[in-house]
Length: 420
Image (cartoon, rainbow, N blue to C red; front, top):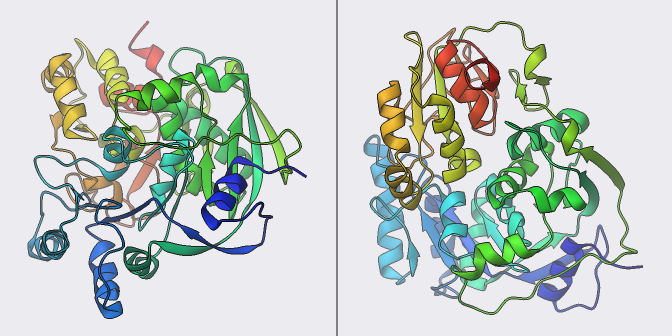
């Protein structure tokens, strides 16, 4: 019996010929990631071990959730990271001025490559599966131990094969694909399983689409999401990754728990209604819903192609007088490119505010907290009760096109309502 992509990466990093689902293994890691919420407790655990870091080049620290520091407590947490990075000469420390939202930044600067095994003390670390890597979130204790030892333990997950066919219609993006999948299987439909995306439809997806899809694998309960390495992957990493890497390909006789097929050409923009990402409806079936806020950005949809789509909708239009529109580029490079292409000017002229890269409102941190009774359309990844503010507020998840159209209309709206 053959192995899946995830199983092959595990086997190589565990020094084994093969692994099977359910097997407990110990693997060497290629990168350990932490942010300003999860790294401080991990550092505390690391210091209890009393060892040096296993490799100063294989630890990445990114204070992005409450950065720039929103209050004294967040400043103290960032200070812990900053001092740790200085003490241990950590190469990959990214703060204000050279920072970004961690899951936008790390692929962008070449810290992720195909076939690698990456852990991060953040649930959306699974984003990096878009590049053919195994990547998953861990707790702060596991992060602290891995910074000292360079390895950690896993239970090998079984896999679900998701076959994508055809090409996406206009205004449909990776966000619509992953929300459609979550709507089909539920938020626990892939619990502790690997979502392996394949099929001829993969070639039609940009790297931004793939990063968005892999990012939200966790919202289906998955251990990880992973894409095959193709020409688009190699082109993306060609100017970013300067080290050797080993790509893997699933065997034809690999075993899967189930197979799901999604015809991309049959999709339409969708919205996930409160208060779960599985509560998905096609845009045409969403009743008129007046909104108070729109957030375009996050580790899910803060890349240049996301901002391009939003700018196309907002160009020459005005944000509704009853809506606060917040645009958050995912990194400094994204911000700079958006400036060069005129997107920032488009957003500001439309009546939106543009923020420095930060997670901000996605987790109810800052830069756009909702009051009781308020509703927001957001390109973020979670819409749990109280996620973006008051427990009596509501978050509707959508792609950049729907979010931008909704900002103009003052209600949840389809892109074609404002753009031919």
